[in-house]
Length: 216
Image (cartoon, rainbow, N blue to C red):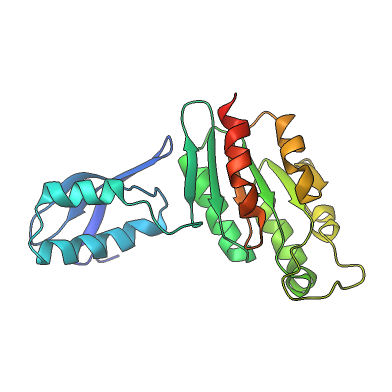
């Protein structure tokens, strides 16, 4: 495809990082590191760098800004990132968003086991999309499903997280639990890369999960 005047080249993804070279009529910048290493941020980053260049920032200032940018709270929000374990929180709650998150993590951590804790959001959405949720979550190595976060909705008979659980691909490691049991379940697991997914109140457990994983 034709490249724009401002674009990324030599994109390197892996080991939990993304680096690329920025090409611009105002001057190229090599080895840009993305602070939030998600592929979708490359295009956003190029646009931000073009504006920064036009505003007179130096290449060094732009590199520092890109490496230190921490992104939007709860979208690919890295909480722990070291040689032993990676943990992030993501607000993704539609099947397509979840798929994108998991594929991004796969690209970053090709050789690691990917585990997600998913809290479905709304009974109606679970009823309408449980097969799509199962398809997206089946890209993981391991899934821990917690009860549906109802928000303002009343329960719908027969609609629980088990609909998703039953449609996960054969062979995937899977558990179902109440949110109060998340820490107990995680304490027994060998976690390499963990992501909490959902737009409900699962975020409330992030500090305790951090504490648990940091003790290892």
